[in-house]
Image (cartoon, rainbow, N blue to C red; front, side, top):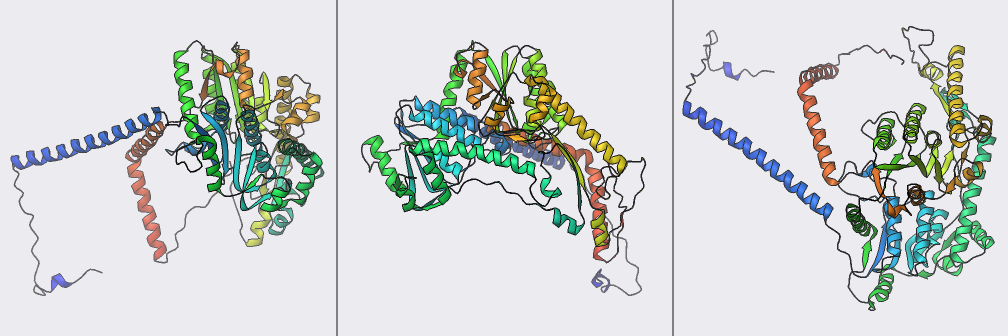
Length: 622
């Protein structure tokens, strides 16, 4: 409410005088001085910002180029605090740190350390980070190769939790455990909830189509218990993985496989029990461990000499040396290493571009057109996704092959469904023993909510054009015509998938169909079925490809990584570009944003005053 104080100083019936604006005198000197001041302030701000950015960029570039200071005698040390990933840009695209170590960098560092006279040993400390089973087995193999050089390898943890984690530990010469720690190796299990009964109670009807019996992606919604096909598949997968774990542990610890199985059946061990059972070698604390390592390296257990070099620092130095060597030897043939990681989607939407078909096809076509690139290694770690995206990438793979270049696939933790679709046409396929692959099938559908809306008193109405306009609507179930169309689409995708695999693997469609059906296989099972050509990791694929282009192994070629991991400098530029784009958007749409803000303010005012604001609530089904 407006105050009345200003009216009290004049006559009740008086007429207020119209206020007069003061006459502004324009002085040329004042205008010129003010303009100069503002100009100087603007120029100064620009210079300051430019200087700060230059210093920041220079600092980053110097940090990028300088080699880490490593001891003359050292122990390679991995504090496993973060997960090991396929490609660092999955986590570091919008930050300036590289906490996450890639599996390739880790394995290369361990292999280099095995032949580096400065490195006297290898130490892992488990501190919360993890690896999927395929990465774990790859790292375990690298540790075994390191030990073959005659250098000792140690692992320390406050607990070993899970058969996989202990499987890795069994590769080391000595397993250390904190005295109050545990060893937990209770076996392996695959479990999932089945919610069909709950969905029925609330009125949600899952309408899912699948090709074929083993394609169980939506099974937890369509059934109240595991299907016979799923049980058969999961039993075979766990049997394959557990058999390999028992063999690895038995070999690493010098035990009989039956004895390992008996320990797994017991499952949980205190520190003392684990020591007695031969699962660990030492029960002690980190300070004791460090004194032991100091004595081995320096001869003095109380020495304060720096002896540890982290895998990250060591990898940075060795990577720098390789780059310098590559500059000096441009005669080496070049091969491209293209990463396809994550869910397969059609377009990069500013998130995980490693799984975007438009980005991947561009990289593959670039490699096809680049005369310096002699072959391509496609690293796949994907559970699948869009069939359209998979077909686009497959077409790009065929383009590379049509230009006379070999395409070798290396599978990571998974290359299933769409991930296998793009792998099938490759000239040669490597998989890890535990890689989840295959799943040659398709599934899809919707959840009909019509009954749910009725239970809670919500009635949907609509205006539509076309007999099947409600095909994708969640508010009604499929009718007979829509069901026929969905089945036709499922058959089309499945038949095309079978044809792609048959052509790529040199099989008949009938042979593929027999091992397809949506079934997932481990890498070792896939090898038996003819879906892959060999078991091995990324370096095995690089060695094979190097030989295909005339080199002895991967060290005889230049590996061009795509997408190239972003440096801190590139990440800063990316952020600045984002700010510029935001500024351009605001300048272009400023008036619309103001208008929208005005509408929202009015809506808020009406709501505050208890006025009901209504707006059209139509939902258009695409």
